[in-house]
Structures are given as C-alpha cells and as structure tokens.
Image (cartoon, rainbow, N blue to C red):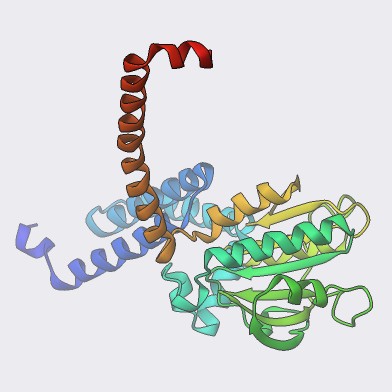
Length: 301
C-alpha cells in the first residue's frame, strides 16, 4: 500500500477528531490511577483499529474486539457516575462545562470567600446547621436538584447567610446555592450519596451527592449536632476543619487571585521592595549618630 493511499482526507479527519477527544479526556482527568486505566483502554482500542484496518488477521481482530468489549463493560461499571454526569451535560447542552471553560458569572471575588468563611465560622460557633453549595462552573440548574428551592438572587453577605440558616426560618433545612458573588436560591434539596450512609448525616450525604455528580462545585457543611465544619469536593469530604482552614481551601478551589487581588499583590510587593532601602537608610543614620555621640549610646544601654 502506497503512502498517498494512507494519507486520505477522511483518515486525517478521523485521526484529528480522535486526537481532540483524547486531549479533552486527558485534560479532565486528574487522578493517576484513572489516567492509567484510560491510557490502557485507548491503547487497546487503537491497536484493534490498526489490526482491523491494515492487517488481514481475522482471529486476532476477533480476540481484540472481545477484549475491548470486556474492558468497556468494566469501565462502564467503574465510571458509572462519571458517565452519567457526561450524559447529563450532553443532554442539557452544557458544552462550556465539558470544555472546561467556566463563564465569568462563576468567578468569585476575595470578599465572597471572606464572607462565606466568616458566616460558616459564626454558624459553627452557635451550632446551627448549614449547607452551602458553591457553583464553580458546573452550571447547576433546577433539574439537577430534587427541589430547586426558593429564588433569592441577592448579593452575597454574611448577614444574609446567617438569616437564611436561622432555626426559626422555613429555609434553614435546605441548601443555599451560590454562583459567583450572588445567592441564587435557598431551601434547595440535594440528591443524597450512597457512600457512608451509616457514618454521616443528611447534610453531609447531600454534600457528597451533589459533588459526586458535578465535579465543579463544592459544598460547605456545618453540623447541627457538633458544630464542626466540613468541605465536600468531588465526592470527598474533609472534616473537621477550622474557619481559617476553610478560608484557605476556598481560596485554593475558587481561585480568587484575579483582577484587583493581583493588583493589590503587585502594589504590596512594590512597597515591600521599597521598605528595605528605607530601613537600611534608617539603620545607617542611626549608626552614624551612635558613632558621633558614644555617651548617648552608653546611657541608653
């Protein structure tokens, strides 16, 4: 077979689309074990394609097809949650979430992190249960919840969060949905997780359930019984944590080092670079005064 027959336009387009899909898959996967499984599966699929297209090996191709089918069923069982999430995103047309390009409305500021951590700390001290969902780019919609709650659409503030989770209000049992710097709704009922049913309460299971289905959202949980703080991310729960630790995790996950915060860092770094020169001048002038007047130095000592 000649080289020009191999380089057909349809074959090049096929390889290009396969390469793009592979890059998208590898860019979304962060765990090493999952990455190894996907590499092995893609290698097996590529080897089966090469044998079927360029080799006249019917027995070998049948054997490789059976291996690909068995591996596909195994991965479907292992990754049933991820595949369900993928089908939900494709069915609702949320291509921006699949491409990993969160919109501007999901970006939060440093004040949002500070107010959320402050409110969680106060709720923890008073032992008032709370559940806050922060949408980081999953584009959560009403059909993603068991009950979408009551629309709020207000600017995020510590006082508003404390009022929403007051024990004498009808919305304190549900979750509060935050997107960017705004509170979208309150009293939201989340789907529960099946893991750790005997270990965690309803709030923690709800936090695990929503973060299992959508990897670009986090949940802050305040236990009503003990007042401990927890943070759920990608189906994992970190507990107990302090309010300062919660603030650090929120800054790391939300990524508030943008815009004005960058400018503040630049200004602070420039001022910090200037202050040592001033201190050097001050110390040099002080040394000169002590040398010129040794009696004053002895009296001060």
